[in-house]
Length: 430
RNA sequence: GGAGCGGUGGCAGAGUCCGGUUGAAUGCGCAUCCCUGCUAAGGAUGUGACGGGGGCAACCUCGUCCGUGGGUUCAAAUCCCACCCGCUCCGCCA
Image (cartoon, rainbow, N blue to C red; front, side):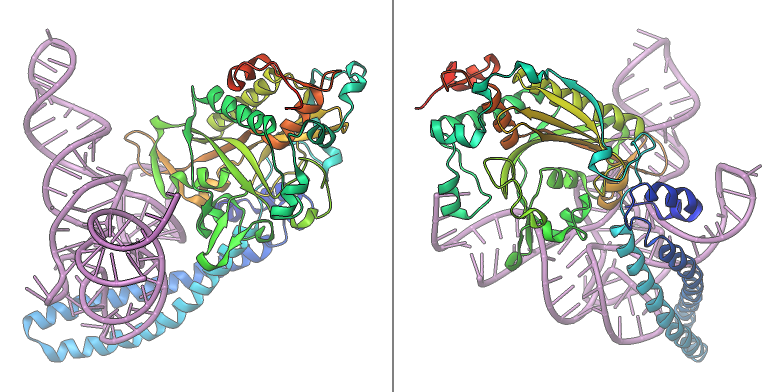
């Protein structure tokens, strides 16, 4: 969430920044400001009453110790009256606090200055395109992956639907092995600088709030009511809460983690969209990179590192891709700046979002209460967070199958994957 | 699911029975200084977070915080109630 003090001291700048998002991003600012003024004035009155009660109570103790019970009784009566007043005032202040917190939790992050302006997807800026030449694709590559999957018996959407319903996927045989190989490759590629984590995939409400997935996007997540647990939509959720309520030493930053998990999304707003193949599913595999950094400079360096690593992986897999700088109108609510990587899938002729690399400023870390302290320094500062997909696998598999389909219908295995597939150089029909 | 124990500062850990100058002993860590040819060891001093108000600032001041939320009381880390979480043992189980 945003820093209330920043809203208070520089409301115009915050308003201008939020306005770049369009929609109702600035809706609650005025209410927050108004409540904040009342909160501070009433809060000061309440604190003052409390101070008086405290002082009187101490004197009661002292007088009783001296055996002067009449004087003590008098102070007790006085304090009791002040206490009643304090209670009424306190209830009002608490109500205001709760409302401000709720409004702050629902207010999105301010886009970074570097984030391009725009109102929607169409205004996103393509930073670069790598390895894409539309004329270079042969007819054999113009086959959508769902047809390839059926032909080779490596994807089985029909049976996935029988088991779990529409928008679930199933990999079989070499398909399952290819997926596993890619996951393992990407974990191995990042082990040099990122500690591997295998986090829980069911998490508590607080954990979902920390990243910004609650309270605003409740409909997007699976919730197990009986136990009040949420199925994570991305490993970003548990990884961000890894250091929740902790004070980290600045010397230990940045802390970097990589995690492979299943991800679960209800896709409530997307029913009926991209229902074929691997483009959109309720459950999918993803490897996520996350960094907790000491400030903007360190965080941006981390964001660049994550992007470079994701790009490197796509190049190793022999895929074409482009890097897109999301505009202010298309930015996720918690993000300050996001780069998407889209891999080109020649069979369905689509650019598929396979990675999303975001810098959150201190927005998530403030929600999660992750702070750091300079060595020997006084006080603490809120950390910055960065995360990005090392890769979202279903779409990467889709682009891979379509890109590497050979004229004989088999799928070429690129050299980096061969060690993970017992040296196989191609995937054929069993 | 049953039984027992527990949740206190950056960390470890007293205090809770018997409510009151306890924001909290002590140790570790950390910072500054002293000692020392360097290092190690040693000595001295200091060191919680969050919010409000004041000051150019060092800082001063008020409040909150001992798992969470209620309650009792003039006064709660300490008493009462509910809940959450953790650990150990038993049961069940991949």
